[in-house]
Length: 147
Image (tube, helix red, strand yellow):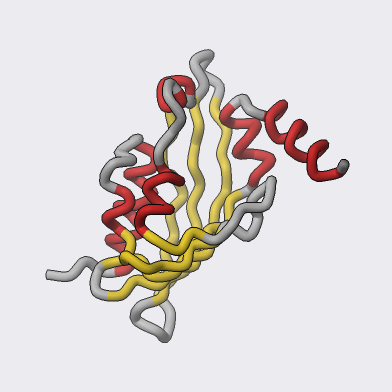
């Protein structure tokens, strides 16, 4: 049975949270259109499964340095188009000291034949960098963009 858009979305966000990055590109069609409209610094669209594999692959030692995260506050809205969902959720980060923070997200996703063919992933960049302890990286990238 072909997974529903909701099922594919849930596999994606829980896979990201659990660090199952090897499985994530397989959730996408070979040709896709994934955009991060709120990305800071601005990012290029991801148009292939190969580009998504690179996107999901952390740098060496990168996965171990990330705080734990889990998916919370999930609300999936079905639309008049059976391929399209709008999903609201948050990633809840837990740092080694036990402090937690939430990063709100909204994804608008088109899933055809069980694969993501299009997605707009809106994720709060400031809260993401802060939750990961990378706020300095964000500031550096903004300074480069300003010069």
